[in-house]
Image (cartoon, rainbow, N blue to C red; front, side, top):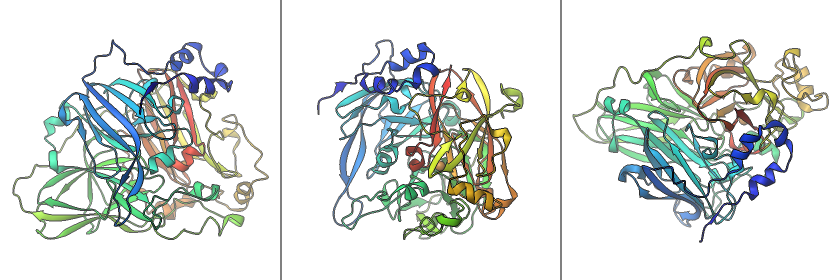
Length: 549
Ligand code: C2O
Ligand code: CU
């Protein structure tokens, strides 16, 4: 297919909505409008990749091949280790070094618009894959940025307006690993001992085709839940390992399923990395919660295990993430559609101890230097930015607003080169306190089911559910978590699985919970998204922009 440079058509379409002019300083508007469709001669790439999204077929089950969307990559310039192909539909892994200058020429060979976002990466606005930069079939978009992130596991995926969920579901995602000198000194397991584990759930039709949600808002509110678990795009994975230590890079690339990771035999999990970076030092957990878009790096040592034995990584049972329902909602929404319920127990992947070896690296006691951010570092210690999560009238919203392509509210304007405290909390329906007024457009909630339920039920949480909240741009730190007593029983089944240290870009906010984070907004100005990474919620509008200026 021939490729044509993107025109500014799409952007101008969005700009024509009008809200933009009032909210946006002109210079940023002008800057944003320049879509990147030609390589810049000033940019000298160390790495150059062509990345094409196109329809493909893969063999996932016996019988007919499955139609998918898949990223294909070709290395034009750079170290030969830059690309690692994954089996199946999952995109090739992009392996970068901190400090590298990367050019990615993205082509759209799909029958619909698309745009790629580099989840977790600290990049200029125009390179961030905002849906305003979606390209049409046959067009291309050129990304040029320097890798500023430290060593860690990030990923890329489609971020197309109202199509993120279906495009990621059909396969448009891949891993990004970043390495740096600090990490290399640690001599962590590498090569065949550094294993990606991308977890997804899917549903298949009788003729092996991917089945996505077909029903209405009720089903989308709950989010897509498949009945088949895939690891790196493959069903029933068994991974042969040796009796030694491994580094596992786990990514939850599912649309809405939350995993509670645990070893079958009760061995604690040793985490060495979170979303955006390695941890300061290894930490052990009885289990680890992994919500959509979250990553965790595990250190697992198979030495001492018997050759021929197996160790299964499971998702364990938990409660309390789905909507609290009352009144008219019971029944329809409460029913699980056959298969794997959210929070049920099932195996994820089996490690088969296949070979004995005596050499194995030691787990380092210290990993990276880490500085805890505190109130002293932030510009707004007493006035955190507030992000209220709500689901009223079957619409998941942020501060009672839905996504608008370019608009920003007053409280979404952030001065560049500041560090901000942000409070993300579940709204209590029917119990709006005066203090929250002024945050957003307050609707009369007397008419909604949520309102009635809220007043009746002491919890007021009729439509609360867990939301994995992701903020684009720099990684943040979790300052505190607060849970209301009324949500204790479900919460008790998940609370020991949150990694609250280290650098994060996605945080799971449970029903009844509020999480306060500290996030730097440095180096770059422009529009940066924040949203629920339950992809159905995101596409339903649970997404907004920060304007950094
Ligand atoms: Cu993983 Cu806004 O995305
Ligand atoms: Cu959500």
